[in-house]
Length: 265
Ligand code: C2E
Ligand code: MG
Ligand code: MG
Image (cartoon, rainbow, N blue to C red; front, side, top):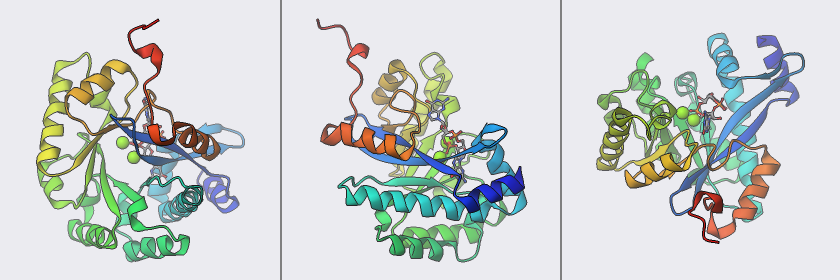
């Protein structure tokens, strides 16, 4: 699989799909780029699976370069069409520990003529496990260039308040595992409430991942969450579909379907 992935990257056969993050007033806060690979014999390979392979084999820097390059080219195309929407790219702890990563990102932005504010990088707390000082330096350099950082999958794994204080992030994404059961599980609801309050008191924006239904959307709005991402709004879409989605929403942004509201007629 590793060899096939390497060849697929070289041949440009790996795609990026884009999933919107929307605020409660409907405004599109950004799009997250999510990598998609269809293996010629095995069919769709789940990202978690091939990302783990890339991580453990040393292919990760290559994959990340590919994703950044593809995403920035897309941002530049959207901007040329008048669609000024920021894009978030997932980066692995490996990337953050690669010497020169921050400078390489800045150079890539410049080459595409994309301002740093149009790029967001999603990291996980795992970046702090290996070499916290190196990670902190890289992240400081990135934010110094104007790139916004987002802390992904918050609430899983090694979450700790110390990490939150140490990482120069401007956004926190509450993991899907808490969001999914929010409407039916009081403890999950309390965890989400506390996370939103904590994040806000630290001056961070809060995005909830994996929002699939209206009830969850309403609970998150009432808890003061800033934006949602999930199938309720849209799944990750291929570039053309994402462009059509953005154009169709226009300045009104995303509105919940009429069917979800009490019947008027
Ligand atoms: P993530 O960054 O937390 O991305 C969110 C995942 O949740 C995506 O899975 C997305 O398709 C899925 N999702 C979004 N809305 C919903 C929903 O309403 N319900 C459910 N059940 N799922 C939802 P995906 O695309 O399979 O990606 C999995 C993980 O793989 C990502 O989690 C991210 O950690 C990693 N990943 C994806 N693309 C890249 C990439 O380009 N580079 C790196 N380093 N990692 C990536
Ligand atoms: Mg992510
Ligand atoms: Mg996540």
